[in-house]
Image: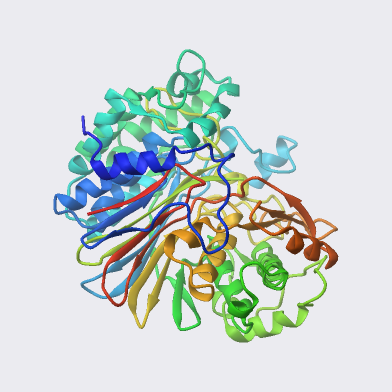
Length: 565
């Protein structure tokens, strides 16, 4: 079994100083821990042991893609409520040889038997949150395979062996993940409980968790490749499990599955190029928000001003109104991406902004004018190949169902479809649902500058924007940018068609947001509530343009760590 190195031990010590619910959110511009610096390679993710596994791959001569796959496999074992091979994967890769960016959508489609008529016959007006009717084909393993074949240098056997060893011998559960795990105790499914509970309870902090079934599944992938998952033993077992639980999977659904290489899309923000993936993900919401913010002197406003936070919240409302109407699988719907992310369109939308009053009802624009648990990881290697990768089950433990002989939960992404026949994101067989998980990357003059992501469902675009504003406008370092107090706006219209709340949603403010800012936001018409911690889970690696040194950040809201050598 692999042993945790010095860097990992130091990271563990840093993450266990206090309970996340008790840890004070740092004052804007300050950080509770130092930036991690290294010159050869770096990995950042939400479990220190998973980050260490990726770093070991780099030290052995593997590249950033190799390390990302190994880290992703490890975190699927170590943080199973958030991710795993029963879910989907998205990635942006910067390839140093070609000096260009590549985007990968490794997300699965609705089964061929999943139709709106089926739900109508069952008397259902919407797709359930849990259970077998929420399954779409998991895309993670095919995503690993696409990444490895296009850019990787190591075999699946080498990349998965560390996780196989931990699955067989046990991996200690850290504090935040242990708290998330407790939700599994209410699950009554026997197969699920056999995998994830120890004597009927979730593993406690510091306790070893073993998953021999997942070790066997990883071994099948290591020996037989992606075919084991989509055509072989694993696919056959998943279909049998579907039949047992009343699901809709057929073997044909798995053999049909293919990931898709796509062109990342960008906007510019104060001289930086900010890259996201196009729909069916929500990444372009980040670009829309940045376009709305850029004309304003945010640096002058400062991170502790009501003017900045009011502007941010209103930009979010405008972008998310478009998200609710337009974002969908572009193979099934016309998504006007170039228009939505244009500066001209932002200028038209900005006319709705009132600097002294909150918007209550926000309609989608006309682009012709020009709950979720997730993991994020990023890797930069010695040649400055960069990987920004995000992977998820959607809800905690996804659908709440997991085949005991395979050792992983199946996602519930199909819940994000709507049954509204007129909606762009309506359910159709073979269609991919709207997705919340988004990787990101920033370049400067065409060169990689910042690889980052933020976990947390609807919080993700908001988190991306706040990180970038902290870094670019407010001059914070990569660690402080992630630890700074956050605001999250909830209640906007969703991609499933629900309307925004009549009062314009709720603003959730962390303790580090000053009382006078909260009072002023309320005066301007915002409904504000105090929360201990907002959603998130930032990880980021910045390449210093002057020295070339890597700077890593991993926020204290999670168990994670940035480790380098």
